[in-house]
Length: 595
Image 1 (tube, rainbow, N blue to C red):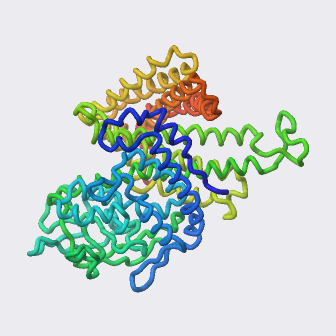
Image 2: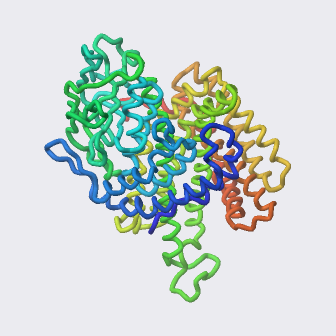
Image 3: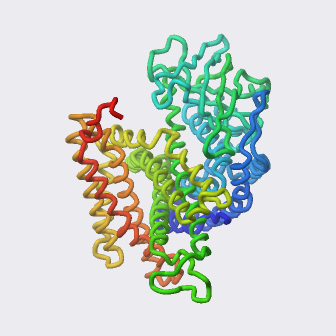
């Protein structure tokens, strides 16, 4: 089965749903007309299908190899494919032109990232983290640091990593022990161990720039005493070229259930030379620049793996002959009917497609908010977009990875026993997608971030504005016969989300365990609401195309899938609300020693 990049659907969302052409007056958007984006994504789709996708199974089977000299080699073909990515400029799409990038909107780069990740998630993780390092240095680095590192990170000539986790601490970063000792020349000596570092060592780039959280000697305890440091694998010479080897080594690789083609490293820092990024003891803020970008990227990964698995399941269902349709043979000249005639197979495929297409719209809509937060013409618009990006980041990360994994699981179910073997691609998709629910903050952490931080931020300004936008969309569409089911669905689920929000306000402060017990269901309810909004916008755009006389079947199919979402997926909201309102009592009732 060959992966097919969803260029057609991405272009529909960017052009018709998000109206990207209407932002042509904003910085970065002038060179992003619909025609230009169509050319870029069309070529990107071909590249992902022809260059990256054929290496996906290779990376899974071969994995990475660690050698006693602390070097790591990537699977066959990865170096060559990575070099093609660099040479063709794919890695610099969203980077600033001042540092050698193409300066295109983040939303365009996000569309490329979906295709690339679906084609070969393990390979694409290397440059995905490099862009996160680029963003952190761009946000908080000195001009000298920007001039030295950003052009090489933007192009992909050098790689980048994010070093947070240590053996004794994951989410609770206040427990880190890696230490930084100031030197007379303004640098620091970094000593400690980091684990689960994606791309910590590999053979794809000439240098790897590690961004490392550490505590300067004498710094305050907890998260208030954490600083961020640039620690290169090779110390740059005066001309910017890699020089002497720094005191940082890969001490080994983790054996994992998936993403075998990506090197997940144990990193040992032994008096490694590093340079402070930003202010001392304020490193967590800059690391969260990377983290928030990575969380959106992980949402993209979850969606992409679910979509690739769905594609494989559709192909299998169209060709696998098994049994007869309940309403009589549909393939009378054959020994059996293709399994796509069976309602339960259709149910699984439609569940996946309805969530994945709505999720793709949400993913791109959220990426656009990040662009508008930088480029919108007035402060109020920039603030609103920034609020929305922050509010929706945990939803995109958690909801799309939960549902992407479910799509991969349902794809395996469609394959039956064949899917449980390694002869078919869905086994790898299921294994690779499972990590997306865990790293960059588990989905439970995302739910708590949404409930505990994002809802109350700035007095609830973001969620109140979001509710107002939903109400406006419903009011505009409710009298249109084609859009009425979508408007009614959104109005209903938004009312449930508002009820859940009020319940949290009334019960979460009185007993924090109530908020903790409700958080995952609240995020699920929020995700369904967000997708319902996207489906209303998508239905409106598709209906407008049909009304203009466009006979492309794509638009009628879009309405059909959207109506399925409203009828068959959206009712999950009732269960989320019911469970949420039971509070913490049934969750916490059993004593710990009774488990």
